[in-house]
Image (tube, helix red, strand yellow):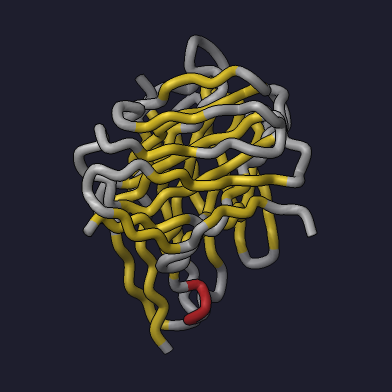
Length: 114
Length: 115
């Protein structure tokens, strides 16, 4: 089945550690996104990529890093520089083009810093 | 910068009611608008996508309308059921500028339908 797979579903991290969240899609989508969701805050954009080997910062990129070496994959690293990393992280993808482009989401990864 | 607002923030209704969720956006220069559903602890599920040239889209008991010039969209849910209980979010995609590829989300309407 086509879709977006995020792993792990749950992740616990000690302060000062870097962690990487995986996002893989087999929808042949060009654009991929990482959002962070906190209670009462709505979705906030961390990074997005419209094509392989290119990505742009979103509204809250500080303390995060990404890579886009393959079309199917857009991993997010939460670094120790991110001061408040406990949150629900959502990856999404969509086809490119002005009059298409339905956005699809993965099931999310919940990160808890101990 | 595009801002998306959803009203009401929460809604509680008895089963069987027809209801309307509202979404407004500040910049009418959009490619499309998308409605999503989110169950607790889960990702977002796409419900309806309306292109800027369209006025409405329907899927089953759901109907979404778009008035681009006034910056408004509504999601109409007919004959609501307890299984419709979830948070509903809308998102718009701008059609110009440096933010061409991204979407802007509202904070959602939390819907509870009780038996």
